[in-house]
Amino acid sequence: SVTYLSPELVPENPFKKYSIVDVRCKDKQGRFFIVEMQMEWSSFFMHRMLLNASKVYGTQLSKGEKFNQLQPVYTLAILNENYDHKTKEFYHRYQMTNRQNIDEVIEGIELIFVELQKFKPESLSDRKMAVLWLRFLKEVNEQSGPISKELTEIPEISKAVDICEKGGFSEAEMARYDKYWDSVSIEKTFIDTSFTEGKAKGIAEGRAEGIAEGIAEGLTQIVINSFNTNYSIDTIAKITQLTTEKVTSILKEKGLI
Image 1 (spheres, rainbow, N blue to C red):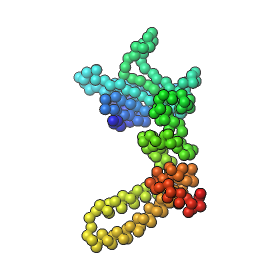
Image 2 (cartoon, one colour; image 1 turned 90 degrees about the horizontal axis):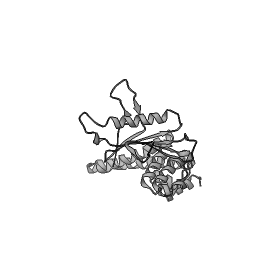
Image 3 (tube, rainbow, N blue to C red; image 1 turned 135 degrees about the vertical axis):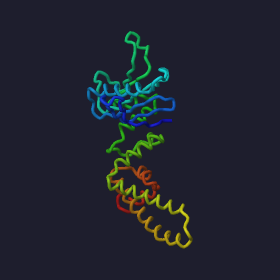
């Protein structure tokens, strides 16, 4: 299990540095995970990562608590720009080690940097899940066409793809999408609510017609706009919760295929 924590790292002393990280989590074992997304590399970024990890590590204990209660902190930085030009390796793991014997490690803080531009799927064939998530980060963007089935077969990655696709909607498309689900919520509410027979009949007849018309109009427009934005029919069906046959029918009716 994972608990999402506030991304704000507020110092105890108000005159010290205040930080905001992208994602900060804690698992059921008590370990901490910080995830940062960095589009452009800057020389101070690594120092900021170390500072944020140190803050989390150093503020775990309250007064009087034992030091052996300290839990490790892992920081993952996903970089969209290369910083280490001396190697082709894209995965960099930093720990506190003995310089004379690197097998001697002081546990507590680990920093991991991933350079997406260097990443090639075949370089980690034995770590399928890591490869699939890195492919998702590198391949899914506003120019993406149909998403690989290999990615969408993983429930968590499929959910992430859906979130990205919704995030790519225009304001008008998002409004129609929200209108559709609002109509669904209204319909469910009326179904679950108890009315007298006469009142229920009057409301049902008038409202059902309006809801059906609004849903149909909103879905049709989402299908058209999504198709014009190069989403696949399978993806559009998943977004709208229509069958692929219905999506195809709408597109044919509008002369798009």
